[in-house]
Image 1 (cartoon, rainbow, N blue to C red):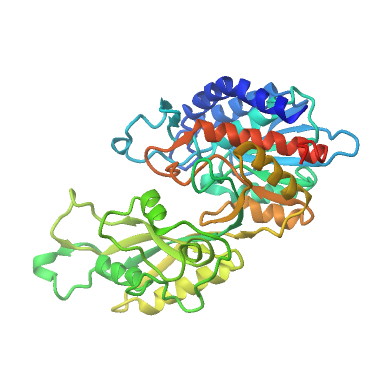
Image 2: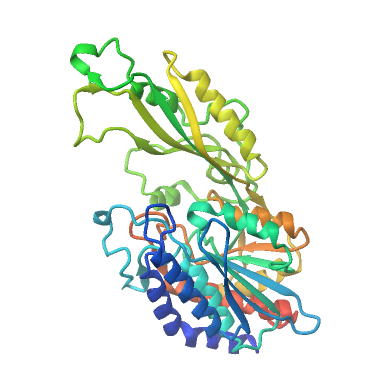
Length: 451
């Protein structure tokens, strides 16, 4: 197929692709404990149906121990052509407070060319970008194709990592496309070349056997919540930089967002300063960040006049690509033990860790992607980092060191992933799917783009 034919094929398939995205995003496939499992299996079934619809001769759901099934598809490579692995995930984050959504989270709503709903961007747009790119070839793929769509990335991605380690030949490929990132802005093409790793744990502070009256005992009885707050606030200095020894600030060589752009996309309230030192690229993509992501304490509406005997916090640490997650979490835990006041009892548990990723300088696959994205977007892509983590990427890098791993997708930074009012820009989705299809053609037949 010529580049013109590919572009027209993707454009013609967009109405069907948008309808499929709406149906897929309407399934509340939250794979967290405590949520219904049936919708997750329903999303797996629809993903299997979608992969079959694009002409892949082999498609199946694959059990993943301790997790929901992955959906796998495969087509053999034409003689002499490389094989490309395409990755995305069909599970989503919980919707959170429905009152914070302008439209119902699981009733995808189209407004001014943007589709709103949980998972429309992260990462069901990745599923559909693969579908649109593959559908353009009508079953006659220019390269070997393998597709793996994960079912529990948002909660327990390490389970697919273990599956890959046990089945290395299944996903072996010459190039790997991970469609779970995006551009800084709509229409601003980029390739994510670094990911921070992640560690997380739950900390519990205990001071009393049970709550006691704050009037009768307050002032002498040690308050677990007060102790917990002192501990978590000690993690940062007054400037907002991490204080834990052994976790230095890093440097990112590429260009990051401007402060104006960042304040807008992050929704920083007027008059509130940003935190930390160094450039925004340094802070977001190359340095450690510690965030308290949850607290178990009495709610304001349920407050009683009592000194609290126990308080719990969930702590998440983002780790530069070269950092070691286990060493990092040990350093943070030891620091918290040292700053714990009043001899309080402190325990730590529910640990999770995931390594970061740093791409190499690029080879044939990256060169082909550069040409494809330049045609689809009208300008070549730039390198960016991502502060988030994709647990599977480092496992793929370890298992397939010769493969080029390419991260791009339709999740621009204003897509509100993991937040209320998540959305995907449909024109961005078309450009990303077009770039992917052009990339497959170029990799299968170099100079297919005439560049």
